[in-house]
Image (cartoon, rainbow, N blue to C red; front, side, top):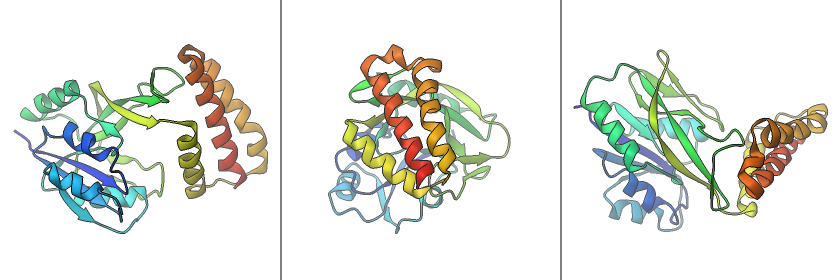
Length: 233
């Protein structure tokens, strides 16, 4: 059976890290790479059996790649601290790694939670991304934000999803997206004028955000605002 490491990067995540580590308890190893937490993030992770390392912030892509390099096993699942591996997904991963995986890596769907509600429209589900991969056949890009795993070959896709506790409040969304837009600005006054409206139409109407009720409307409005920030900075 192929052994599995779960890699998590953190910074001041004491409110969510314990549940993330617990959801990864089926793995042979959980590695937490912290970038200067001043709360109990590291202590909580260690109490739950995770291996905790420290690294000054390198940007998302390089930080996650460093976490991957600190793992003991070649098969890696990269988990964010506000994400959870569901029992169904854990069972699927175990079954896959018992045999000989036929791909270098696998896409995993995310069920995103906004403002206490799971969102199945707005273009936010299934939200596939490569999270399980063999590190000898793939690695993270060095992007400061919106990083991704580049594989040798096309990824497979797992059937079960993980859960992402994306945003509890509007304030949390605004704060995080403001920081993200500063990390990767794409300054264009014309796009700042035209793209926000299109973003709202795409999310709320074309991606059927209206089916998610009030939360869908808020998501469309907030992402259109983020689009404005991204291009005006």
